[in-house]
Length: 457
Image (cartoon, rainbow, N blue to C red; front, side):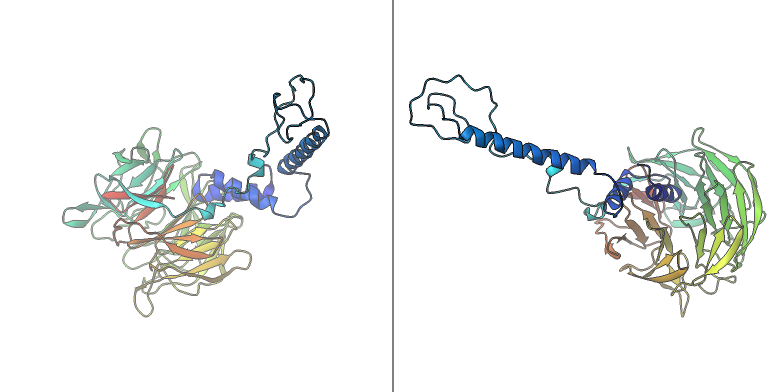
């Protein structure tokens, strides 16, 4: 299909999910066929016309044969005519094939077309393998081959979560449902980011390495799935954790804000260039923030929203736009609810859905409301509520719905109805804000360390 609209939607999905889904292509095809436009007759309409013409021809043949004297009962009867009582000479068996009284159904005449993707029933949540070692809050990223790389985080033991950061990395394979150790990182880190680059490698940036929580890392490293090893690359000018990392359309990675040590949130921004292996300063955001979200828009710009303010005392409602073409940040509309550590995901139509998180006014509390950002107007609008407040991560499913993960619960947002629906899991989900939700090659992996679950949409 060579169409600018479908190409734009497909490239947008690749930029967000790195995995163009065939169901999305079919939904685009259906949407294009229902859009009024000047086009020639479709294959379906031509085929249907031929079937109708064939049916008319068969009816004429049957009618003509009805005017001819019928053969005796001893002869092979012809479907559609009764036996005649008038004696006749024995006829030669007719070579005309028997015409069935009812034409068999064909795929083109089916009265039950394939339902749209969003009409499918809810999926299921099942247990799968366990991480070893168990890590809380690892950074998870889907590799090009469908496996999932999990790196770092805080170590877990029988007594609970420790403050020790880990260098460990593991690979999850959906087929056998197992975790396998891979090469270790050069630095122990938690609160870092992991970004899949266009060449299939993974860029790991920043984080915190010490148990006191004040030593923010400026180091970065690259994971090569072909060798299973991590190698150092250029370093940040400013050590940071709990920042955002966004793969831009040109293959570079935008690193924005984050935790700068103590209670300080950062305004500074840096960009990593895989071609040179170096970071370069990229100006500053309009507002210092950490635990914010950064979402790539369909036009290549980046929406940065919410987070904690400079002194980490109040959640932010403010949002801004980064334009790679100019290298500048500009203010855009603000959210109705200030929030941090929330979930944000792009929709098929180019809007951004924001949901859940935590507020700080008048006191820290889980947020249940959702909002939609429209890049065309630069404004947020209400988008319903989650029944389980505090969503902190989201995954765009391959049928264009979005799976939201809250503390102990799952919910699905359906763009066709604009509504959230709870997912009956039947299995316990730890009520912690360290869950990762990542697409594998066939389902969504949920883990916060130790035993993991998979959601099959």
